[in-house]
Image (cartoon, rainbow, N blue to C red):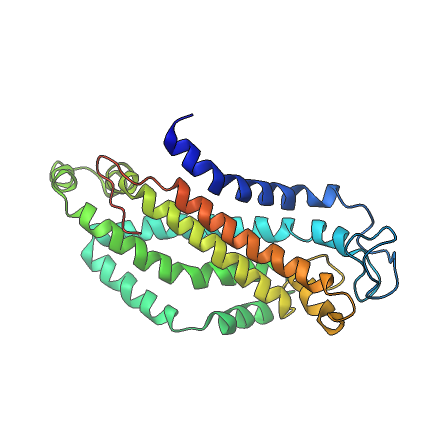
Length: 271
């Protein structure tokens, strides 16, 4: 194991463990997530390691079951936003006319507050729910991501080898996929980490506002909202899901930064 691997592993392992635990959590619950096992806001003990929630349901079981949908939603949002922004931003850098249109559109969408945008989409979407929140998060995350990738792609698009390929008659798609995007690996990986973290907070915010998953679903944000009135009776019902959201976002961000390539033959690392 070389020195670079030893320096990366400590920042990657926590994220991998947390994501794995969140994905496998529903199969690890000691109790049914919808069955009371203690008194409302019961103290830890008597078969409930973290006590009970506002209905006496096992906090630990709901904590284990409440992270999978959040992780999958945030991952989907991060991948879609990063992929679309990479293509659109690179095309904008290669085609200045398209780039100006993209920048003006992004400038307008950036002005929309995230909370307002999520509520508008989720409340107007037929049936609402988690899918509506995902659509809103993708739409709100794209303007920032497109501006970032366009700025990172601009110096690469103006380099000699790209201009030579364009002068040689290469198609736009070839220039995007073969000439520019491979040199934005560090930027795109860092962007994916940032979009994932933002998606975790957006989806959690939607759950806290109850415009995403609805009770009695096991969801970390819903746990915080539902159990906040009894925080003095059983603090773990609020502290545990809050810590889970924060640790997930922090660990994934650190892992993405550690995995981003720092050097390369033609790398343009702007983050």
